[in-house]
Image (cartoon, rainbow, N blue to C red):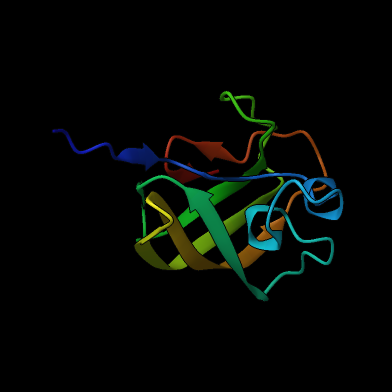
Length: 113
């Protein structure tokens, strides 16, 4: 038996169209109304660990490690692991610090530029 845990340097969520088409839960997707200062919930399959001591990038994922450039800087406020129907999930809350409207580099590893 082994423990499978993933360490994520960013929060990667799906496009909201995945929720609208019925493929994903709303919390698995980037909200349409993404706003600075607002707190949102997220949901990821698997036991994931996030850095909680500062800002991390929020990116859009298409799966299989296909990530966009960061679309926002967020602070992860809360993380909980749970089991449902024999599958492990990670849920939590994040607060939007800044939304990026350009293609500039805004992070270098865990450092905000």
